[in-house]
Amino acid sequence: MRPRIIERGQGRPIVVIPGIQGRYEWGLPTVDALASLGHVVTFSLADEPTSGFAWTESAGFENYLTQLDQVVRATGGERPVLVGISYGGLIAAEYAARHPGALSALVVASSPPMTP
Image (tube, rainbow, N blue to C red; front, side):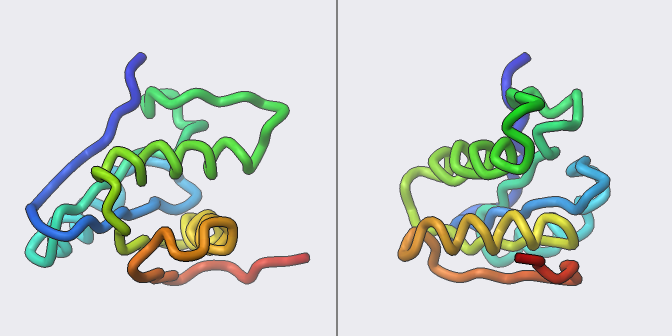
């Protein structure tokens, strides 16, 4: 299955990472609202069977970071605004920490705390 990336709007790239439920559909009202501000890209998390992204059980959380890197590159090389909602906030924060300078902004909404 080919990776499924959902896109709305035009302009500066905004990548929205969904929460633990994993499916992009839960965040569509947010995606549609953000589309007035730019080109919004979202997806279902890699462990969601309909996402089309690869999942390797032994890689665990790293699967999400690999997936997000693929999505960010699909935005055309521009530095996107990264929006992580709930569990997606953990993914967004880790990605930002590993890729300093790759984003124009980071938004973490309703995310659980990170533990060492």
